[in-house]
Length: 146
Image (cartoon, rainbow, N blue to C red; front, side, top):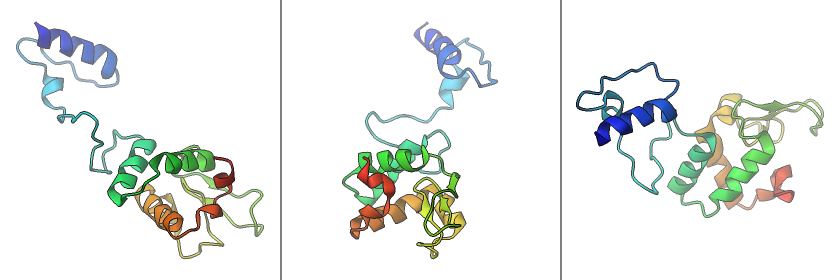
């Protein structure tokens, strides 16, 4: 009975977009296919589509041993509202340059970073961590705000 109630609640509240209607005779098919969760541990696979941008940034920061994951999330939120594919072409110096990706990496000042890299959350987060660890935290306009 407990499994039946859990399955019904899961279907109603946690999986409204799933087109799965399990038969509730003995076990819930939905529950059987879910990966086990470890309490308080972020998933290690950054390719998981169920993680938010914030969760992915935190996971990468943990993998890199970065001490300030909250700062990284605030920086990305301030720079791009956590938008991996955002671009800013207005008000940049020099005029005509483009800020790209979740951390708004400028194409003029960082021409070594391709558009593909700037828009890749994993790559851009690791690059940003390296820049901050190397003492270039002040490169981001939002550093002065957050």
